[in-house]
Length: 70
Image (tube, rainbow, N blue to C red):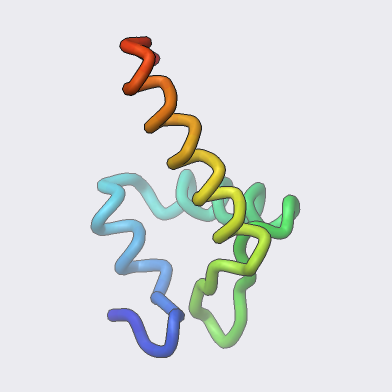
């Protein structure tokens, strides 16, 4: 469950419906780019991660407005 913006990896794994090995690979990649941080066996989105997600949402909304499929 979420606690102060933190979530446990098993919660993400269950919601994403993927194997732990694959999830770990993706989490390490996102951490390498500074989008997530791992502390005390929990995951937290960084400010950079929030900015990226906001930009991604803006891009998807723009594409939808323009009638483009992705």
